[in-house]
Length: 138
Image (cartoon, rainbow, N blue to C red; front, side, top):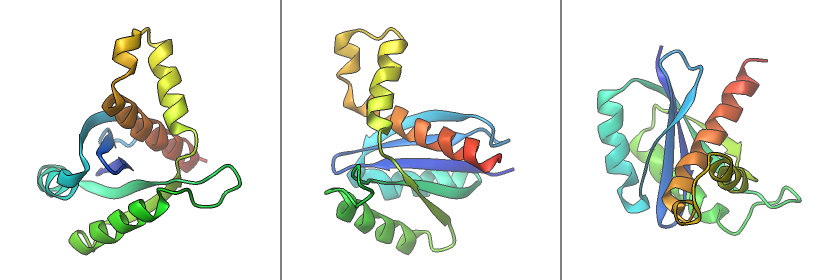
C-alpha cells in the first residue's frame, strides 16, 4: 500500500511527515528548507510510493484564511505543476504548532531543544497527518 505524505509548508522551513506502508502511523520524516521542497519531493517520490500529499491550510480562529495562506496557495500551485497526477488533500492546520510545542514539553525536551523551529514544523506535519488518519478510519 502506498504512503501518505504530509507537508507543513512555511516561508523558510517545511516540515514533512509520512505514514508507514499500512497507513496506520504518522512519523516525522524531516524538516527542509522550503526552497528545496520540490527537488526533495521529486527524489522521495522516485524512491517511495506515495498515494496522496496532505498540505496544511492555515486558518484564523474564525475560519478565514490566515496571512500565510497565499504563500501556501502558491506552493500548492507549484506542487501540482510538478506533480499533476498526485492527489492533494488540504487540511486545517490550526493549533498544530501549539500542539507540537506541547508535545515537545511532554516529551521532556529542554528549553534549548524546544527552540528548534524545524522540529516544531516536523512535529506539526506529523500531528496533521495523524489527525487525517484518525478521521479517515471513521
